[in-house]
Image (tube, rainbow, N blue to C red):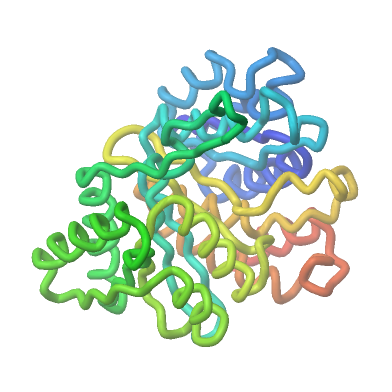
Length: 326
């Protein structure tokens, strides 16, 4: 099983190294190969997604990604984040899964990932007006809705579809299509909630949610909010899946250049992403469960500074490896 590892920028290399160390013990038969991506790739090749990196990703069983982003590229014409958007589009990983768990909270954000505002026509008109276009085709909504309902069927059986149907034409179509798809899943309950209400309820009553289904931009914001209310982005993992080909598995946090090299980066989100890779990308649910349990125990025993402790990245790795031995 060949894994394309894209360490990326900042703490990306550090958390990717943590995942590599743990996976080498848990699933030693994995072949993990590093490839340039993001800001590091721009510095080396001029492109955030070099051709040979994309080729390696297309040939891999799964893609494990550290983090992208460097301050010197924030306002540049060529930016690390363009590589991420291009990779998602090339692999057609339209379903972004963002689990958030803590205590009574156990929810899953299912975000449409390759359509909407981030991918629509954009530009500048002669009068100086700048525009970004929000577009969706019904088929894009159908496939992400099927994914959400299928996942809810194996959970608590509630899908909360989030939109802005009182304002946006795309949201009215989204609501209509999701309602049609729901008829094929009689064991799942569907509710429609406006995005502003959903954002408020995620703060005040996050335990009420099971599966949150939403479009790209809303999902980007709400999934970070869900991560924040369940311990912070240092714990938040994600899986981006298509119908064929490799998925992308990555922590939600950024490259955190301010702490890069300090040895204090929390690797929990990356390790949880590796567990999602084992479950959804490699069909290794037993190993995924073992890793998830070991990570949950490790962050209690060895909290990093972002969690109020003093543990280092290597301390967390050691705790996870000890947990895997138990």
